[in-house]
Each structure stands twice: as structure tokens, then as C-alpha cells.
Length: 421
Image (cartoon, rainbow, N blue to C red; front, side, top):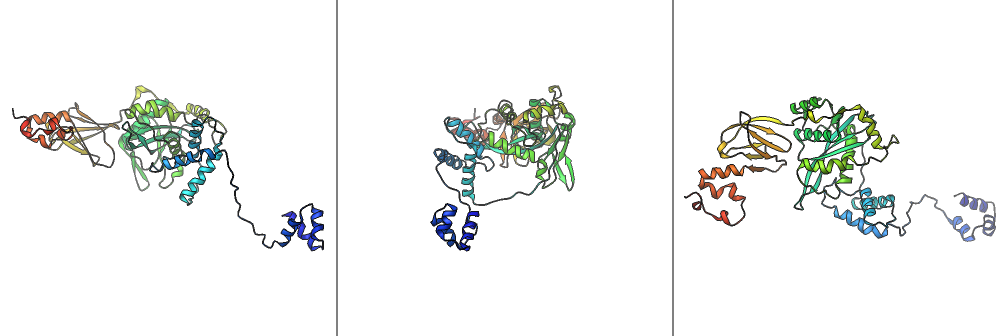
């Protein structure tokens, strides 16, 4: 702009185009162009498009972004994850994270063409040994190849940004306590304070008061930590665990992890080792120290965990079985102990992974895998039903035992073929 101003000032002083071009050592066409220019309004900045080192990989990136269509909306590729996958697949790739980040951002903007904003938050100071807990959810690939959406519990430490993750079948109080117990046992210490969301199953808020469940009160008294609850509509009060939920999902669960074995086995062998190793060498965004060193420092502020003090996470209820020896729990999940226990008064022991039925004297009658979800389910004790068929053979054609058999064989047998001897 200073050159344009010099050209116009010289012209106003009476100099010719040739004199101006010679004095400023520029072409006469340039002088004439700026003398004739009338509009000096700022122009929209335009990015020059040119072939980049990312060009050979753009189709692969687009394929990843297309692949995630239909996945859980919170469990999708990030630019960081895509860059890591590209570098692992192509050893000779000379592409930076910033290249991938810019391209992914442009692709996502092109796809949605909308913007959003987040409300401001209050700065908070977190101390050693303080933690936050909350649930996320993600799809996992089962042994049969299908996808199943499961819950996972994150415990994060804002002082250091350390996190631990366990996969659980639900968000009940039993799942919260069992998940925390697994984390305590793995890392070997107990945080002083845990901040919870209001939506978890460990309590219910009535106006400004929070009423904790008896099982959770027993659990935290047993392990000696304090519980705090975030205010309604104030997610920033536990923003560290919110971020860690997304971080764990994006860096461990994209693409969906293969879930094998029981929840206890999967967490002990896979999820806890992987999640506890995340970002240990990364530097804290404020403290200019590694997350691993900060977390090692705060261990001294927490109490050690002892296996000798293991808490039995169980909730007992008394109930009466109906005429078929069944009862429905959690409004939608029916468990059939068997017709030989019809109309019997029993004790139900609910744990995170199982439902056990006990007689009134405390002896175990039957243990079922606990069912979760909004769909209605029916779980039967097949051995008890088979024993019942001995006394009521005419119920064979409509028996749950027959329904679960493969076509042919006994399933074809008419009622006359069973128990007629």
C-alpha cells in the first residue's frame, strides 16, 4: 500500500508515468494499473491450492471419514488418530499432523456446513489426589463380529491429567462401585475426593440436596474417600473427566475394540493397562511437566489400596417369586429360578455382573448373568425347567426349553412322545 500511495502522490505532483516508473524502478503498466484503480476495499483472503505431500493419502483419509458413518457419533476418527494410523501404515510417509488436521477440518466443514459455540467456563484449581468420575459409551466388536454399545467408566485426576478406564455393562450403583474398585485395585491407591455427575446411579438429587444410595455410602466409607456432585447444568465443574472420556474413546476405541471374555478379564488384561498408559509422556498443558511425573508426585497425597479390605459390592432385596418361580427386576428383566420355587420368598443379591437368588436361610439357589438395557429380557434356569418337565410333560410343546433347541430332533417331538412311559 505504501508503494501505491507513492505512485499516486507523484502523479498528483505532476510527474509522468515514465518518470514515476523510473523513479520507483517498476514497470509503467504497474503505475498505470494503480493510477486507474478506484476501489481499495479489502479483498477476501484466498488460499492458494497446490499439490501437497498429503495428496496420495487424501482418498484414504476420505475413506476413513466415510467408514465412520453409522458409528456412534462420539466414537469417530480425529485428525490425530488418522495421522497416527497413516504413519503406522506408510513408513515412508512424509506428512505432518498439521497437514492432516487442516485437511480433516476442511472435509468436516464441507460435510456439515454449520458452526457451533460453547459457553464460557470458570477457571478451577485442582489439588493432588482429587479426581472426577463419569460414564461414556462406545461400540465394541463382539466375538461374532457384531457391534454392541457398552458403557465405560473414566476416573481422571485433574492435577496431573492421568486417567483410568473400565468397561461396564451399565450405569447402576453396583457398576459404579465395582468399576471404581477395579481401578483402585489396579493402580494401588484411593483418591481423596471423587466428583460425580448427577446422572449416575449412586444418588438422586432433590432440589439442592443430594441423597446417596446406602450401598454407595457404605462403599465410600469402606475406602475412605469423599464424594462431591457437580451442580446441575455445570459440566465444566468436571470438565477434566469429560475430556478424558473423549480422549479415551478417540485413542483406544476407534476403530471399535474387540471385546473378549468377561468384563473383569477384559478390564484387567486390556482396558486398564491401555488406558493407564495413555499420554504418560505428554506434557501438562499448564505445568510444563510430564503427566507421568505429576501423577507420581500426587501419589503421596493418597491412601494405598489393600486387597485385604476388598468390599463386596452387592445390594440385597427380599421378594416373592410368582407361580412360575420367576421375578422381574429393574422393571424389564425377568429371571426364572424354576417352578420348584414357585411362590417362594427369596433374597435377591444384585451385583454388577450377576444376580443371585438366595433362600431365606442364605443358601444360594441360582446365579444368573445380570441383564442390562431397555429391551425386555427373560433368563431361565434350564436345569430347573427340565426337572419341571418331568412332572408336567404336557407343557413340552410350549416350554422355553423346546424354544431354545435347534430344529429337528427333540424339538419335533409331540407331547405324546415325552413322558408317556
